[in-house]
Amino acid sequence: MFFETAGIEVSPWIPPLTAFLISTLTSMGGVSGAFLLLPFQMSVLGFTSPAVSSTNQLYNIVAIPSGVLRYIREGRMVWPLMWIVVIGTIPGVFIGAIIRLELLPDSQAFKVFAGLVLLYIGARLVKDTYFSKNNKVKNIAEEKFRELVRSFKDSNTNLPKTEIKKFNLKTLTYTFYGEVYNVPVIPITILSFIVGIVGGVYGIGGGAIMAPFFIAFFRLPVYTVAAPALMGTFLTSVIGVLFFMFLSQFYPGTSVSPDWLLGLLFGIGGAAGMYAGAVLQKYIPAMFIKTVLSIALVFIAIKYISEIF
Image 1 (cartoon, one colour):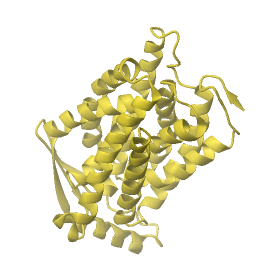
Image 2: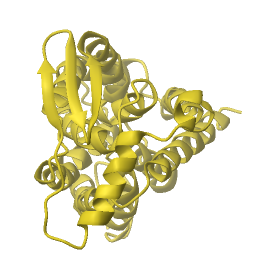
Image 3: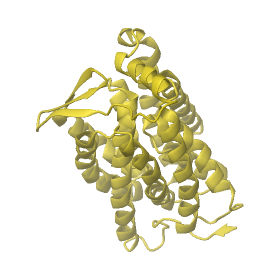
Image 4: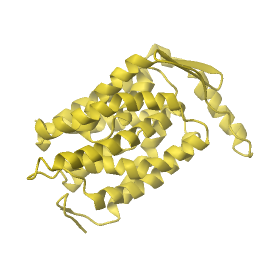
């Protein structure tokens, strides 16, 4: 099948299958999988124009809702945390889209940028997961959650839910299975803005990059990070696609708007994977989820950076 906007020819079953496999793993860590789909599109399929960024965001729009709905049903959506991400990232996404078209239209320059971003996040996550003294003691809340899952999985009893204790302009406080987490609102909003710029350039939505930051920097449990990060990614991706479509009229000689058919095929597979990941997450150790994210981030980063040599 030929995809006109992308300028590539590929069997129609490859995009959904690839998206399903990727999103099943990554969605458990609050990442849609778009950060791995973009390298797949560029390096494997040969889709290198700026339209690959907006196509990636279209994938997010189609794929994410199924997983988020599952998390909401299970009471693992921390809504204030999601809104902090969205408020910070949306302005950044606008700036990122312009940077992508003006400063990084060349695929090679874009790969270097993407590689450096992913390498930093991946290295930070690896350090925090394996070498931080604070992480040598297991996360108590995550262990409690795993124990509850084991005790409840053979019954119809609902698992306990996260509870918001305080939310204002300075602090968000919520509980997760007996543990209290305090989230600084202003620093995360500023960080979300910066991440939104990067996400707008890369085409993954700002929320996707926030998940590793929540885990590595703010030490929030992965089981409460996934839903807010994915929902933030969904909303910022909607804005991102609309903005790329608006910008396309100012770049008539460049493919800017998404390849709708390709994005939908990726999204269909991603939707199935997102739901599968949301179902499986509570049965998978947090260390495994963090390890998968770390390996994926570092591997793609090294591959991209090495291409300049």
